[in-house]
Amino acid sequence: MTDFIDRHLKWFTLGPAAVLLLLLTIYPIVNLLFMSVSTIRFEQAQEVWTFTPMQNLRSLIGDEIFRIALWNTVVFAFASVIIEIVLGLALAILVASITALKGIVRTVLIVPVLMPPVAIGSMWKLMYSHDFGVFNQALTALGLSPVNWTGSTSLALISVIIVDVWHWTPFVFLILFAAVEGVPKEVIEAARVDGARNHDIAFKIVIPLLKPAIVVAMLFRTILAFKVFDQIFLLTSGGPGTSTEVVSLHLYRVFFMQNELGYGATLSFAIIAATIAFLWVGRRVGAAVGGSR
Amino acid sequence: MLVLRGYSRIIGILLLALGVFIIIGPFLWVALQSFKYEIEILKGSWIFPPTLFNYADVLVSRRSDFPRNVLNSFVVAAISTFFVLIVGTLAAYSLSRLTWSKWISAGFLGWTLIFNMIPPLTLVGPWYLISREIGLSGSLTAVVLTHIALHLPMTIWMMMAYFSDLPRDIEEAAMVDGCRRIDAFWRISLPLVTPGLIAAGVLAFVFSWNEFSVALNLTSRATATVPVAIARFAQQYEIQYGQMAAASVLSTIPALVLMFFGQRFVVQGLTMGAVK
Image (cartoon, rainbow over all chains, first blue to last red; front, side, top):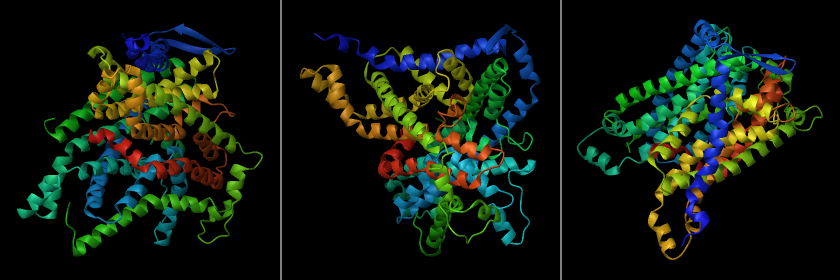
């Protein structure tokens, strides 16, 4: 004879999470749906909703900044993820090859992953400073002229990508390092007995065996790169001009600076659709890299 | 692994040292700035009279909200971590051990994945309106609720991985011996996934402490969290570089402390997805 709690245990256990997600994610999305077909104005602290089904869509089509932001986000995601994978992979194989100091290296490398992205943004804002930043100090000391890291249209996006690479290469390293340590020793020993040299072992044995882990790291990072907001908000706020504008920043401006709730909702859906599309393409690329999986 | 001898070993160690330096260099440089007066920062000097002025100004000066921000962040991170662990662990247990129809479990897990992928800013607008509607606008409760929702997917997926590592027989043996299912969960399975609880808890706490985009839009001046405060130092008409550096250094302390004590669990948690 089981008692009441036991008989309904599955409802008691999944229930709270389901209610929470329903109230805090599904309901807001339904809300977004209604907002996206309306124009919402504020009059005397009251929201006035007008039903204008096509207008927001028309704004979306005419929104050039959104197109630029989407492009910047894609460039940002592609560039930073690829660089991070290459560097993270190199680091993982290097650390695994050197027996001493493994613990210390790993400890140091986790720090950026756990730091507040806002703190990282403000740190790099100081370092990038045109007048007293450490990079320009170094350039001046070498007799070169200082560079306008975050203030020039051609360089700002690259500067932002550099920060992202600094921030997330350690995370890629952690995932890949766990995978490198999981490569069976016998396989490598056997290859060595057969006369394989270091680069053969790295490129023909270790890296192919790491492909699943590489794909996972790529997916994780692509998702995070598409969400990027904090660091860029602090470093450049999307500027100069629109050179580092990413989709989250644009949405923030439309929603909270210009108070265009209806159009903001439409923009949200566009961003959600773009995220899913981008990840779908990313997974295809990942599957192609990872072979038949 | 690879056998590095002679020159290649030296080159390897040098490369590694360079990597470590690149990671901690920026942190040390900013920490250095936080001990300078504004004028020394602007001059870019390397030799300067060290001062604790910035820390004093950030932490104890009358016009500073920072202690308040720290308290807010602490309250939000602690409470949301507590609830996300309870709700997430129960859900993970339910999905990995109890019989749900494929439709429900796949739908639920699929939704948590999609929710985890979309930028949080897409939902901040509706969250803002809802919290205003029910009178929670600018309150810590609103931030806590959203942080629970934000970190629920990660917690569920991590705890599911830990539960699926436990053999089912242990629980079944207890139930054969007359234990109720809920007691089997409470007395047997839960203690065995303690490492998972620590890993998920540390990560949820750190991510909540670091979270910016939601807190920026849902908090008021009185309820602002640490990241919002740092952004304020950097966004005012004149950037307060010294205070900004000091606040940034201070904001990383909880992450450093938790990492120091829970490093093994943190690494385990972060790499879980890749190994599985």
